[in-house]
Image 1: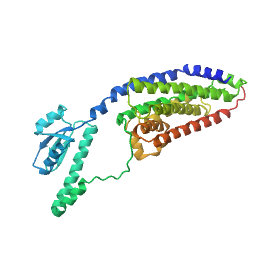
Image 2: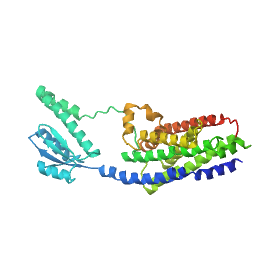
Image 3: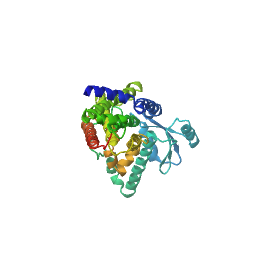
Image 4: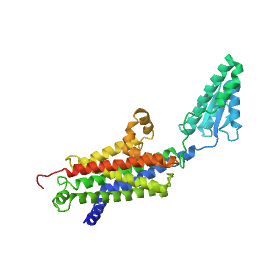
Length: 375
């Protein structure tokens, strides 16, 4: 009896149009667009030496020696080209240099774009201005202390605890693919929603027949949830496989653990939809709209549509993504990629498992409590 119901539920899931569209076709389309948009950005921003144009507005021996010293290092950070202002602007316009350093009483930076390299140049100039101010003040007040000050400025200060990262793929844009997988997982709520509504007599004729049947409701629910989890797991495996081996997105970490996290995440989406479908007497279409809306909001907060939203929330409201299931799913992939130990990854997997258990138990309780005066 159970196997018959399980086979029936698997066939039923495959007939759900939303399943084929959102969980099969949509990740392929969106993943391809992400690859086209972000696939080469990080690679282009990797560098060995940054070419810059240097324009001397007035004599500043300290700044000139600083730049020459950086260019003479074994692995130089900068490759300065000393030129006039007009030629420097042309070099910047042609993309032959990343920025223009104007040396006068201090040092100013001009760039034509945003990104990792311009940000690092800005940080370099800010650090130089700070050091220059300290050195000039020392020379003015106590020249004898200059060597001590220089030694302290050169000393490496580390106020952070060392963490061993695996850094298999430090590409910051891979987070969009993490969130894409998380979106596919949470959209599994569509199948879970069907399980719930198909077991309620007031939602469908199928639900009415099931409630009149001699088969215990527990068998229907178990078969439905298991069938949905199997179908969703297949969808998650296909999504990860397409991204990893067709689009060649490097997720880093252990591939088997990546699949495990994806499958559990898909089961979380099913349990989430089952929970929503078990609440209230609203029709299936209304509950489906609510489930999709909630899913998209959670995906937005996790960074699918706006990459820096996670950082903003971490500063302003860190509790939001701490309880956001989509963010937890995305973070599990991030931890698997970036950290050599599995402590953080395991904590995320435990959280996902807890969510699955809570949503499933609540869904079962709400579903089993429903009584019907007539069917």
